[in-house]
Amino acid sequence: MRHSWWGVALLVVLVGIVYLLDSVLMPFIAGMILAYLADPLANKFQKWGMGRPLAVSSVFLVLSLILAVSLLILIPLIIHQTKQLGEVVPGVFDWVENVLAPQVLDWTGYDLRNELDNVQATLAENWRDAGGYIAQALGQIGRSGMAFATWVTYVALIPVVTFYLLLDWNRLLNSIIDLAPRQWVSDISRLAGRCDDVLSAFLRGQLLVMLCLGVIYAIGLTLMGLSFGLLIGVVSGLLSIVPFLGFIVGLGVAMIVALFQFDSLWALLGVLAVFSVGQVTESVVLQPKLLGDKIGLHPVAVIFAVLAGGSLFGLTGVLLALPSAAVIMVLLKELKARYKNSTLYDAEQSQPVQQLENRLGRHDERESP
Image (cartoon, rainbow, N blue to C red; front, side, top):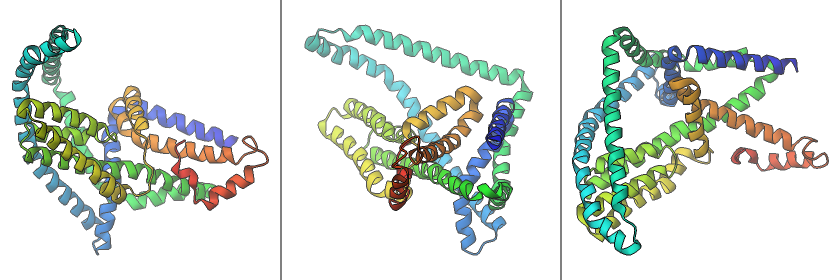
């Protein structure tokens, strides 16, 4: 019981530190996450005969080149298509008012033009609000140069922190394990391994799936000549961080754009084919290769964790949300297994349940808590 109270006290202290130093911790937490993501690549370079410093430097060089080329290519195209989208929106409203609304009125007796006026007013109000927020932010930056300099410093610290953490990543992990109480080392190592499985399945796995789907959608829609194909593909890929959300939103938006642009059933079938190829590729190739049989975070858990973390601790909470959710998920599974093997669950069947789970190869890891 004394050990439990020490654990609770330590947790309270950690939460208090995060709450008090949330803005200062942001670059360090971001650096830890990036180092965690890049560590497998650095380890692979080491297996090729590189020393750790050279391997880490090579990782930074490769990732920096990829990021720079991607930004130089994508940002101008996305900005151009976003401007085009703003120019097309008035035409969409005209089409709805003059073509779609009369048909809906004839079929259902409902006048869609009333709702259209409300939508236009809402968009105009939000656009003005967004402009006001931007102007306010720019004015605040101008009035508070020190705050802006602090923000730039924090952003610049992220790659520096990432580099040094990645350089000593394996040594840091071994030091943490060495500090653990000897009687708990095996349990801590086992639970840490499960946390790594869950978190890597989501961060390293789902983010790679998201990237591949964005590329497939963007290339497919662009090749079929769809307006805003690149923008729709990129956004659909980003939304795929929650499984099926990117597919649903991207398919719906792309079909609407195709309907306006081509006014043909073949165009709708082409859009459906592009997104179907993406889903089949994800199910047959990406999921087995990148995730395997690892069970990552549930989509609902991802959404709740990010919203709760942001509400409690701001940007720092958002960064901590997924690692914390992974730890909580693993601990809940551990509690579930212990509960099902306890006399509280079933005094007579506790031992057979444990033996059955051992024979099934930790079947409890593949079930949600």
